[in-house]
Length: 395
Ligand code: PLP
Image 1 (cartoon, protein in one colour):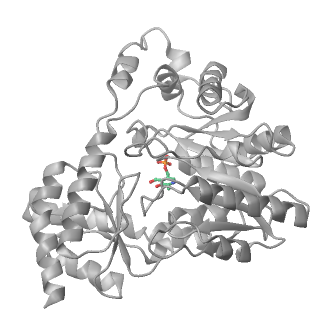
Image 2 (cartoon, rainbow, N blue to C red):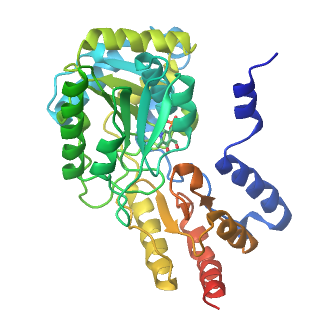
């Protein structure tokens, strides 16, 4: 007898993947230029030139064990040292390499952190709208998902709702900022308020409540918007970082977990993370890309490309009558569907070859997500279809 839960996960693809697969079939039928696929969060900006230079400089013929062999489970020491030094310099902290655990991206960072901290029946609070895979990762760690509803219009955290969702079983809270799917960056005031509540509740229940910072989009912010570094606000913080979006390397599967040295029993927490990575069978993060990110610690993708896409889309969609929050980061626009049922709206958009993601599974009904990490031309060419769709609803 196979495992029914795993069968259910494998036999039903996520809606995003479903739409992406449909887009490939439709593109073969009518031509890719006529399909406006905004489904997948696949970075469209080239990795920084430093990445290519670093790969070229790796001396592939001579460093076979370093580049293709196993590293220690927590990652190469020199790589972890460069990362902890970088965090300390940027955020005025005191991490050591033994607070860093290299992973295969944010998905692995999250799965490992949850597995390391959760016991059967523990609860994890997620803030809607939230990345749908959280449910998979939390339930795989035997945890229960508890959804906190956001403030209307701004999609910032509703602190009262958050506080009402905490109880003695709450083990962790996941914060994702800049947010997928809303593009919202949580303000410093919001973060301070969340941390105040957490500190109060930890004292009340007399056990740690972990703040898990899911940070694949940290570097993708526009203008001078600041993303607060959560370790500076709360001791029991675990940062789940990834280079997938920051350096446009999602297929290379590279990221890390950083444990706040000030967390309660931080050394034990780190060892539980090592144990969770072991039990989930990760063995080690890709060796070659550990070396690449070590050499590219200050590299950045050109976020202006995403900003330009955001501006074109936001300005035109609001002109056509759509409602959305102006995103400060990531590469998603969270748009109110023009009818109550986001799935019906999705179907109508699809009939105009516009592929967006209905967001009911993200914990907010009546919205769709537009991933604008696509060529600028695709956005410009899609505008008449968006305008026609809005007109259809007005009639
Ligand atoms: N967390 C969020 C909010 C995401 O949007 C994604 C990917 O889209 C991930 C985690 C997983 O990222 P990675 O590719 O680094 O595993």
